[in-house]
Amino acid sequence: MDTPAVNPAVNHSDDLTKNPQRRLLDVMSANLQRTNRVHSGFLKQQAANLKALAAGIGTFSLDAPQETPRAPLINRAQLEEFSCGSIAKCFGPDFAVLDQRKSARIPNGDLLMVDQVLAIQGQRGQLQQPADITTEYQTIPHAWYFEENPYPGLPLGLLMEIALQPCGILSAYLGTALQLPPDVNIFRNLDGHIHFKASPPPAGAFITNRARLLSSLSLSGMLLQEFAFELSAGGQTFLEGQSSFGYFRQAEMEKEGRLDESAPLDISTGFRPVADLSSRTVPDIPRPHLDLIEGLVFKENAGKFGRGLLAGERRLDGNEWFYRNHFYQDPVMPGSLGVEAMLQAMWSWLQERQAAPDPRRAAVGFGLPEPLEWKYRGQVTPLNRALRFELHLKNKLHPHAAPALAADADFFVDDRKIYAIRNLALALKEGNLL
Image (cartoon, rainbow, N blue to C red):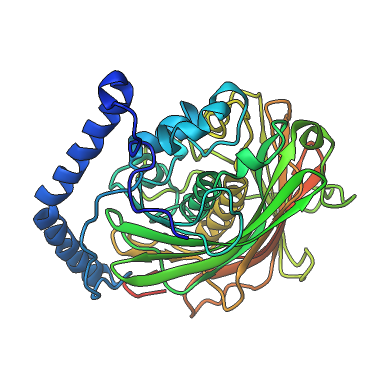
C-alpha cells in the first residue's frame, strides 16, 4: 500500500503547539509552498531564458514543456537535518531512536545535492518493490562547483552525487536502518553504471531524479540494496543508470579493503610531467574543493591498450574538506571525487594537446556507447596519506576530429587498489550537442 503524499515529519496527531521545533518545520514548509506558487511565473520565464541560452551555445534542448512546481514532500531544511542533525525531524518520530546512536546519513553542506523530495512511493518497513522517489535539484550559476571546475559545465563527480543521493534518501525513508542491528550503521556505494543519453543541462536548470528500489538482500546481518535512477531536465532524460549500496558494520569497514593485489606502477622512468594542472575556464579562481591532483605524468604508447598512460597523485593530511561533508560521524572521501580527479587528469592532458576552446561556447560530454562503470571495494579515510590513479587511454586524438578521450582507470590509496573505473570519457566540442 502506498504511503500518503504528505510531509512525513509534520503529519502527526500530537498537538503541534506543544512542540515548537515541529511547528517551525510546519511554518517553513508552508512558506516554501507559498514561494513555489508566487514564483511559478518566474520559473517559466527562467526556463525560457535557459532555452535561449542553450540555443545560443548548442548544448542542451529545453523544448519539452516544464513541469508545474509542486510543494515538496520533504524540503531542504529537513534534508539538512537528516544529513547532520535529527533524523526524526526529517522522517518523523518513529526514527527518534536513530538520533541516539550513530546512523547512516546523506552528505551535508556543499556536498548535499538534493533540494527537495517531491514524491515517494513505498511502505515503511517493506524493503522491496514497489518503492520509488522523485527529487529535484537546481544547479546554481556561479556555485563553487561551476566556478572551481577546470573544464566547462557541471563536474562529473557532482553529477554522480545528484544521481546517487536520492537512493540513500529512499532507503532511509523506508526504514532500512530500523530493520538492521544498531551496529550495522555504515552506508556505502559499491558499484554501478551510468549511460549518458545527452550532455548535462546548463547552469540554473532544475534536475529531476526518479529513482526506484530494485532489490534488498540480507547477508550475515548486513544488507545490500540495488537502485535504478534517471535524471532529466526540462522533460528531457539525459542520464540513466543503476547502482548498489550496502549497510555494514564499522569493524568490517576498518579491515584493509581492496579490489585485488595490484600495486601502483613504477613511474620513476619513461614518464614526463603533464605541463598544466591548472587549466580552467575562469582564471585566478581558487579551487579548494576541486583541487584534487598534485602531480600528473604521461607515457606514450603505454598502458593496457598501448595508447598512453596517465598517472596522477595527491597527498592527504586528514583535514580535507570533504571529510566534513561526507559523512556526519563517518568521514570518508566520496568515490565520486576519485572519479572526478581522474576526469580532471584527462582534461589536463587534453588541454596540453589541443588549443583551449572559447569557454563561453565550449561544451563537455561524458558519454560513450558503453556505459561508465565503477566498482568500489575500499575507502579513503582521514587515516590515509596518499592517493594514486592510473588512466589507460583507449584512443588517440585525431587532428581533424572533435577532441575526445576514453580510458579505463585504477585508483589506489596508500598503494592499495580500491576503485576500478571503466569507460571514463571526456568529449569537447564548440557550439554543438555532444
